[in-house]
Image (cartoon, rainbow, N blue to C red; front, side, top):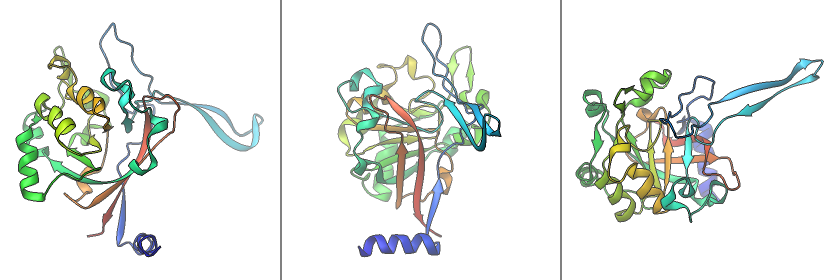
Length: 258
């Protein structure tokens, strides 16, 4: 097909640039911390099996331990009670793993207020300037939070009142879930919801409304600042875990080289 040949040629010549939006997975990768009595996910760890030694002279390999929602990862409907009858991560249609994306940038506002919430009016203003949100595509919410990702304490930004990280208001989350044709929402923070979302009504509205509507969440994205406002295509590659509520994912963006 000419379209695929043109894409391959564009990648080979550099006319199409591939931007990695994935956070490296290490033992220091930040993970969400829920308060007692709630159970927490495991972080990432490697257990060496052999490395060119008497355990295996010609090969190196590891066992990997981590939770489904560790690092850059995909949330699917069954992750939340509102989406319990939806698809698990092993059932995500392949056609939904490659989709267009737009980037809505509120990093300046977040720099002044780590509890900043995206409102429906912000999205409508974006649409007024750049056109409608992409049907079957992603809204990537840029906050600049990925600059904190090497330090769990700074990334979670918690005090005695809980985490202080940016997110989306209850009304906006409901509107994005019910009034748009988006595939899902991507963020740079540890989860799609704001740090204070446990106190919202309903709690964790992005999870509740978006996953309940059969949409998806992408979290802990990096390098979003390198993407254009419109025109990017995301390639999201989770593990096809049967029955899984989510999966760490390699997330790549295809953009036209400047």
